[in-house]
Image (cartoon, rainbow, N blue to C red; front, side, top):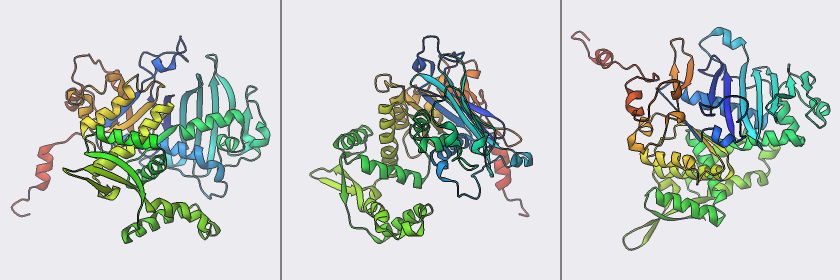
Length: 440
């Protein structure tokens, strides 16, 4: 499970900031009783005004995970992806840093890297199997020769280092060539932390995955139960082949074009490479609505944005819960009623449903999630706040930094400015800027 994420110099984030998922009462390197589940929070919600940096913190996590997943294949890149803080000229000359603190098989690990447009500048992996730090490897420069190894990391470490250049993480390359211990760690970071961005493209990607999962009856029945729970008037789901319409052909072209960026000309002309994309567009999720005397079938393009949003978020969430994974969601409340969003969050907070300790990290503007309307979905341990400082840099802090009592209405106190992280809106200034003067 994820204990902490740290990032420096990424988009609106200038200074080093941390999102901490351990409970505010946790101290030390590991729990006294070894029970990480009781020492960590199942849910963390990030709230703040527009442009405060909520999305940027989640994007930094997604950015780092993408580098971990793919950098083993980046040797031919001319430049490394680099998104520094833009409101300070000095930051464009500094590297960005990303670090994950997590547990795997009850052992705590810390993995991180620094990078800029020229490539990887530093990288490290430490473990804490007995409460004391062990250096597994540390990298002090762009090349594989700059990696030094601790005596506890077994394997062909030096040989693998020769395969690494400035565009590759050692972690990614070692996993690709099946280094046993590194591969376990890489798999956790690359496959067990899932990011759901708030974009049509990302939602379409999740729907395509759900179509594949629904080939199994168990996932399809689970999806039907989730839709019935949401009171959307849907009785069952099917996945069927349909004839492609003109607008769907255009959508298919866009999908192939976006994917083609990573394909060679030879791959593009190979029909076997395009066949899965054609089959995907031709198969659609069909929603069966119960009418007064018969059922009516609508395809996914005819459904409301709320129905599609619920399906695209809830099914991956259930899969994360079943595996004890981390699910990161931007704009969790988009297109969903507050009570439905609250129910979604409650899936992770329910200890019987979430018995493996899966975690949900989300960003939201919906302050009702803090209040009584949502049925008390969030407690003070679950809330983090994002605020934009006067210099344009984002900062983040937990609600536990404040004195919060059990009978406090978190929503009301937050909106009144007790905890900061709310927009400073002046109705008088807005009105004055829009009223046309007599000579206007």
